Amino acid sequence: NFYSKTAQVIAHLRGYGSAGFRLGSGEFESTSATLPPRGIGASTGPSGSSLMCASSASSSVADLGSGGGRINRWFNLELEDIAAVKEEARFWRHAVGSSQLQLRRPPPMYIEVCLDVSGVLASDELQVTDIFGHPWTVDLDTGAPDSDSVRSPQSRRRRRASAIVLEVWRLGLDIDAAATPALDLPRVYKQAIVFFRSLYAFANLLPCVALARQLAAAPNGLALYCSLRPEVSARDGVIGLDVSLTGTKCFLESHDFEHVPTPMGTFSMAVQYRRECLFSSTAPHSLLPHDSLAAFGTADNTYFTPTLSSRSGSNFSLHPS
View 1 (cartoon, one colour):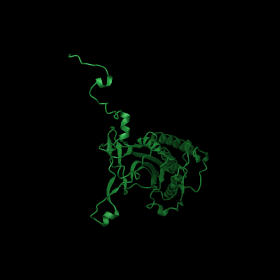
View 2 (cartoon, rainbow, N blue to C red):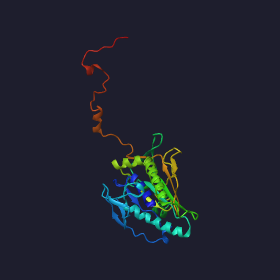
View 3 (cartoon, rainbow, N blue to C red):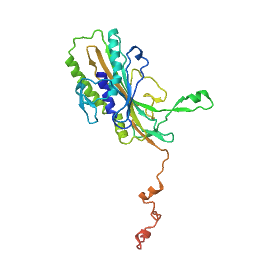
View 4 (tube, rainbow, N blue to C red):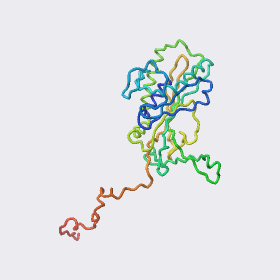
């Protein structure tokens, strides 16, 4: 529930339920070989996005929210339950159980918040505003050759990026052999309540929140999506978090949250995020239509006549002084 609630807080504050938002499945090939199959079946969520259906519901989930989903009340924070996130979090449930028996650290949960730019046309430009208010054009050509250019060196086409990483959240559990099993569980739960309140408040202040609200009102070919992964690595077609999109050097920020001790170990949470998240997709060299010039008064050919008498209709003369 700690893993699931963390991912649900991020998903809710990044536009879950709005048009275009989706939950991407992470890559589990590196660690899931020793775990039971997850048994995820694809279905369509209430917002029309591609989601995963969960096989069971938590006992702390009851009632229905405004969107028709159940309300999750774990850690005294009411959110509409996201079945896909709960199903993805089962991976870490089995990983933690297996790691506890072997006294080794389970894989951390990385939550990547990405901007989907696959809907930006090749003829359009993706612009981002830096921290000083200056617009920059984002180069979506990642430089990675596609399959055709590998076969034919004469055609060196550059692969176009389909996503930009905006935030990376990391939740880890340090298994401690010397941890006190008799740790007061109500006290642990109260500390977790404080943690999730600070997580919700801090995540709601990051620059990506303004982008989520902007895309909810006017997508303009852009969309946000979250993915859960046991590790973060460079991927083809994805502009990583360490790549600057503007000329500024201080484009990244990071934050570490207070640790939460448990009888199994200590939870640690950190985030690294872009400060520049004001994106827009526009057509280059776009001009106003000729019909719209009338709104500025330019339809009148005599508007810029350099005489005052032609407009006033009265005899007007300038004094020599």
